[in-house]
Structures are given as structure tokens and as C-alpha cells.
Image (cartoon, rainbow, N blue to C red; front, side, top):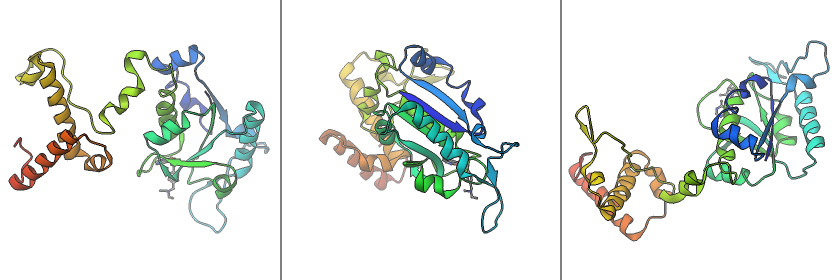
Length: 254
Ligand code: 9D3
């Protein structure tokens, strides 16, 4: 996969993607990341990429011309008529794992990072094919959101993760939270590892983990439980927890 990022701050992308899994993926020819400075596509002598908003108001707006020309220049190079052109913006659809999976199937991605108070609307209406937000909090620009998208998409490309850490495992909990994990020592500062994990009884351990997954998800992310497809046994356990919860009005173990 080739990823082209359009930004006013290309330096921001240098370090994070030159490390670990991503670095290895680049070395193995599985992914290539290029950044393009939007300022390089301005035509005035001061390389101005923003301007005052029509109709007044505070803050500056990113001009459309350099962004259109940067995208056209990348498109001419990559010759892929099917490339998603993604504007990172607070107005975008909320990013999630299923969007990451969908994007990971493309050979090319073009990401546009906005800054200032926003981007001329013609970029989203006539240039971008998709507009993505990473959540309901205010950031200073689209660079970190672009990195979030890149990180989550690249790890889904076949061969990027080692076989022992396959993204297929992501779905083993069916979109639920994970069970608690422990490593040595069996007791640390008076905090013990749950007895069952030391028992060597693999059937009991598997049952405990499945129960923990449901217990935690019910407690912390009930929205995920609504969408999950649970087995009959898991549904029964979830219902048992819920009835006990309402009866005891307590977070303690029933
Ligand atoms: C004036 C109102 N502001 C919107 C709340 C304007 C504004 C704030 C921050 C416009 C752009 C930005 C910069 N943020 C992004 O470009 C951005 C973003 C974000 O702030 N949160 C979550 N996802 C994203 S994707 C791009």
C-alpha cells in the first residue's frame, strides 16, 4: 500500500512511522508513506496556504487551490483511478475498525490534513471522496487523526504483523473488551493473580476468561455488548450478571 499525506507539517510524520512494526513493513516493501507539504503547491512568494473566511468570522480557512493541486499531482503519479481521497475533519464520519478494514483493501490512500479553523468546503464537496473524524474532542489539526488512521490500517495489511500477533485475533472476542492479563509474579505487593490462572485447568481458565470479557464489557462498554454476537452460554451469563446487578444494585461479584 502506498499512502500519500498532504499536510502543512510533514515533519510530524517523520518519527512515529520510522519505528517498530511500521519500519519493518516499509523495509519489507509492504507499505510506503510519503508526505507532501501543501505549502509547496502555493504560487505566491510567501507560500500562503490560508485566507480569511468569506462572510467574516474568526480564524483562518485553508485555501482550496494548493490542496486541489497537491491531490492532482499525487494522482498523476500513482495512476490509480480508485484511490480514496480522505479529508480528516471534525465533520467526518466517526472512524472505527470496520472503516479501517475497508481502507486496508486499497492499494493507495490519499489523506488530507486540515489545520487552522477549517478547510474550504469545496475540498470536502468536490475533491475528497471520504471525510473522517476520530472522535468528539477538539484537536489542533488533522495530522494526529491521519496517524491514527494510518496506524490502524497498516497493521491490517497481510504480512505487517508477525504471525503470532495476527489481526484475525482481533475478532476472537467478537468486538468485546479483552479479559485481564497477568504475568509473573503470582503475588506482587500483596496483589495476587487470580487463583484460576495458576490452576493449570485449561477448561476453567477459558470459562473464566469468557466470563471476564462479558463482565467487563457489560460494566464499561454496554454499547459494545448490544452489537456483539454472543453464544447461547455467553448470553445466559450476561443475563445472570444483569439480573444480579439490578437485584443487588452493586458492582461486586454475585
Ligand atoms: C470553530 C469550530 N472548531 C470545530 C470544533 C473548528 C475546528 C477545530 C479543530 C476545526 C478544525 C480543528 C482541527 N481538527 C481536525 O482537523 C480534526 C479532528 C478533531 O479535531 N477531532 C477529531 N477528529 C479530527 S479529524 C480532523
